[in-house]
Length: 105
Image 1 (cartoon, one colour):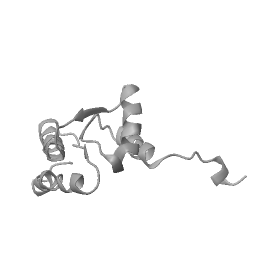
Image 2 (image 1 turned 90 degrees about the vertical axis):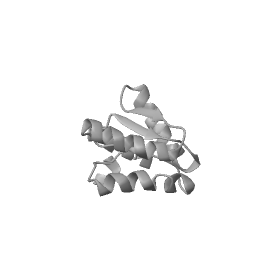
Image 3 (image 1 turned 180 degrees about the vertical axis):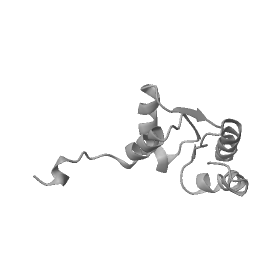
Image 4 (image 1 turned 60 degrees about the vertical axis):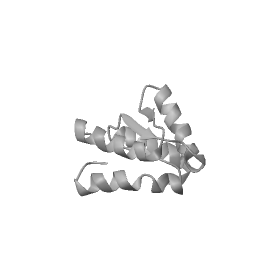
């Protein structure tokens, strides 16, 4: 039997959330939107199982700055989610700030 026949099929959302859990991520800051909803479905399952906690923000820019602040305060990786288009562009300033200061985000 080929190795492919024995592999489990997973979604991209599952693979992402599973990878974040394996890397010790405990908190994700974000604002849901259409393009990212499959990832939020998996995040909901992970949170219900006692895994990663999602912190809902009022604006995508707040997610990036919260993830930056979280990383600075804890030394852990800060993670933020936003949908495509304007949601993603609203993350840019916070991500750039973290990048310029070598913050793990």
